[in-house]
Image 1 (tube, helix red, strand yellow):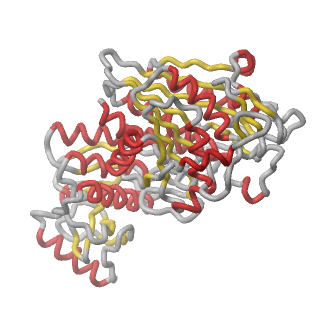
Image 2: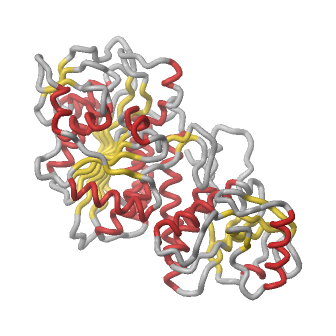
Image 3: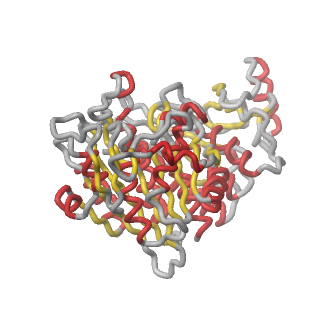
Length: 491
């Protein structure tokens, strides 16, 4: 299992002298950027842009013949909108470059070689361009007969070890995000709890990380009622995967928990057919946390990280859990199942219990948990709930990483919607404020003093619309970059 993701190299050559099939240059407000020292070529490109009506609108591209003075065969202009190199909003500038690089690479299928010369003047901007290029170059071709990917990519930037190091870090971040995309894009016929666990073990082996996998027998014996309950309707049983990165000298411990429903039919509370079409993506939270951990390990960040992946396939088989069944959870609490399609919180609850027992400095769960997230925040903005400190840490890191996340509350009255006459809780709560209610349920399985955040990525994890910026159609790799940025901040 591997999507097509093109790696890049770093060069400090002059953009005008870069030999490539295509030289990528930015344009903003109808002006071409990044050709200092090549005045005649810049004037020619400005004239060409004006002649074809290219204004530099964010995300737009136009390919023109290379004028005299440019070594490349042709030039691709990519719009950065109202980009301003002197803007005090560093995060916004980096995101403009990220999106511009991504849009350019999406437009260059089959091109033999590409030199990317966007106006990156700081290490953070070089990293942003590299990440955007890596994400824009991504194609998932495992199940297709065609193979038209962008060719060799060279990122052009300033001289200095810090800039080269920033490029290398950007490569790692893009690769981690693309591996998460690979997992989410893989059909559920091939990605199910057991095969998923094997993929994680293989990837961890390359990095010499510790992996523990609990199968059905161990889960039953350990009292993981939520994971067993959700997975028991499938002939392909559940797993709980724990991955540990523990570098010597690490002083902080981060714990990431990711929802891993490899396919969600809804169970006996069956979804409508149309709502099942993208349900291979219901494990996007688990893909995000494990690939973020691998990225953190590849960056050799001096922070301990543990990833927990509760994996199950939610199917309506003859042995499936039923509405009104009562599950005894790993924590000892009992939950009455009132809707088998509210399954993600059940597997998360068991994994959160285990993760919390290790008393990490920061506990974060990531999940495609509720349709209410999409109603509240749309398809591109994740909701973040939890303790005030943890929530603020996630939002701050998301801003740096260029991922749209928004802080949301967990109103106290939400928990009363889970009252049960048969158990401690029901698994399905009130419809109004459903995203907030789901977080209230999860909070019952987190220690009172835990520094905990819950990230609902239901919409942002899977793009069902047209590609944009560095975001392709289908899996996006949502939350990977934010989690890596959190580890950077904690290191």
